[in-house]
Length: 78
Image 1 (cartoon, rainbow, N blue to C red):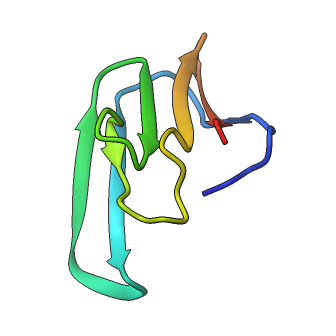
Image 2: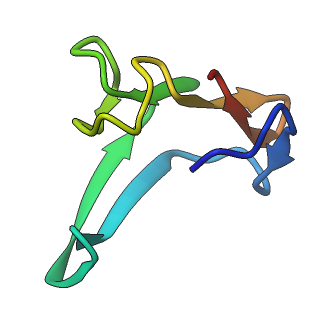
């Protein structure tokens, strides 16, 4: 989920819901959904990440999704 330093907007302000549809390349029978109502969510390998991805290819603070005005912005944190 790396987008360089580009910022991407995702529509109007609303709660965020991350959906997992596959694991280890295999489609899951049922999607896993994780709702959030905060204005900034960090994805990464660190135990402090809001969405933890325990993979050596993911940095401790890999990306964030943040509410900016009425848009959600995905940012690469490295």
